[in-house]
Length: 416
Image (cartoon, rainbow, N blue to C red; front, top):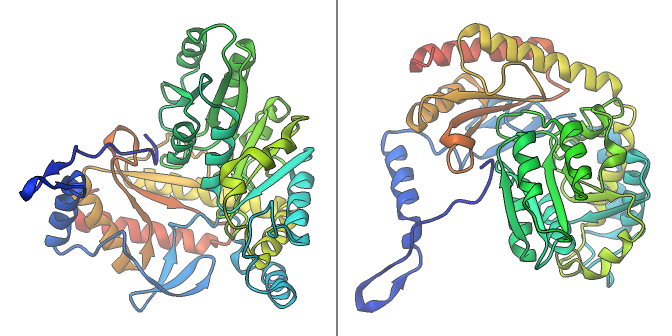
């Protein structure tokens, strides 16, 4: 499952009949130790010593091109965004020290929610402290015991965790399979509450869901629909509202979940909706009620970024060009990719196994390129992937440089 939940081994008893609660992780510990024993730098402990721009950082003392962030629209260094954050720090301090339902709602939180309503042209918006909490909160609150959540088998971990927290029955269907979704919905008892959770772009392979056909199936069965647009907001769709907008079905979606940690360029999460009873969620959603609200500087940067993304047509067009060039160039070099054609800002390069994937990751880092090494169980079908995430601030010249780095590293490691 894509960024889903691993199932660790059962704990074993240590000496004195005490159960070692860490024994469930032994296989993972051994795998990591074997990887490091081969002299490979730990791919999951990289430190960025200085971030120079949305596309470059100093890693291990070297100027490195960043191709493994979710900074799709390059908003992290936007002058207006930074200025808004600095002003909020001066005016409101570093944090709220409280929940949204107590002392943690400032003017900036309401303004950020207003920016989201404007961006999506929807009636309601609710900001969470992280994107993970947005899925956790909305799913667990809307779908409770006795209800059914129908989801794609490759759904994000936060979606699975939201189901578990709400005690809903989980029904999974085959990835992006419309017939499988139809059959699963058809087996749910008559009269039961049904929530179908879909993602616009799936984060591991960068593939897009056939939302138009899937939502038609959901409506046929009387199910509510939640779409996670974390990896498409700001980039896909005429106004950057995501895959649901691109496929013309945004008005048929009951809830859209998103995050500030990708195209918006900061941290936080949200849900937007037109449901007339939506506002009651502020009082009953535990991951919203029982956590501290975002710092004033964060919601100020988010609101500014969201409003600028509304005028991001040229940046969206350039990001598409970057994605098409990188995908086509890697395919021409002989790399196996996660999709036949570019579908999003994510280009996944499939590796033969974890060992050679780690070696390729390290070879690219030595070239001066950072990408994500993704491994099972976070990846579908037990794949090892080098996941590349493009940015609207990557120049055409940088993309050509990246292709050269992949060619040299791939030949050195024996991947191509």
